[in-house]
Image (tube, rainbow, N blue to C red):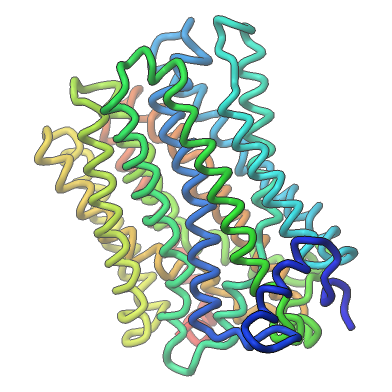
Length: 446
């Protein structure tokens, strides 16, 4: 039996007991619907952490950690620290792949989610600049890198498990399921901050109110851990693991064998990943810095737009199965390119323009992002698919999203909003070029 197919710790044993209580002493059969629920819960918890930190990067950290700077410079430095998680994530993938190979999937997932939860909750105790000076920024950077490092270990293969079990002609539908976690996480995080900003005086919110979402994130991680363990330790999942369909492979061997596909897979979704931050983190910073508008209103718009995004992600599954994933990726990249020309004008057109910007942006984001996960995974050799998919996701987020808020805000502050549109256009062009270069892509992701 492969390493990790038996419970190696108390949490895994609890998961087995929960399964046995269903009537099968060895664990009940996990249906695709249950896998989908586990995937959505896991991704929602990760994106909730992501958006809690992102919102705090605009509303809190510039004033808490960088009060000696002007608001723009403080926000830029806050976004620079924000990017550190994306740099640390591939390093975490390397370390946790090693742990996966030696101690099993359950041990890896427990360790990663524990580290993610701790790195998130300690931010709630972060002292400000007035208490410890520049050490506040140093600690925030360390905690942020801890989050990114831990995210490298949260890859559980459940999305791949959905993909390999997708019925013929339904691959697009199953591919979109993990992506639902992003808009759901945004909705919950935005509404939580709306509540706190609404009920607390500004002084209290900056002193202690902003800390509560990080405690909530820790609690959600605990729920997500058991939801995912309940599936990961089942015999069915272990069987797929033993068949090498979800077998962790050595990192260097994977990169050596699959580097071309990993590179293509990282650049193919750049349009959706660039748009991801252009309609979530970046506009909040622009509105907060350059308008008199209350952040409450814009966070409410983001939450509503997130609901539109959920519907668009679901629609991407239907469209992809009808027209092909490659066709949908190419079409949405072209539409994002067109949107990049009008987005600056919309964002600068007052409250009505902001609403149109967000709604149109989230429709495009949902359609593109819904099919951006694992677009080239079928091209990986079976023995490399599990590890190569994790690396591809790491590099896609690093190249497409990690520095997007920082770059977009710096460019727009220096050259105007039109420069942010040009940045978005560059992501769309990269996707179209990647799809054109990889002529075999169509046959593999239709």
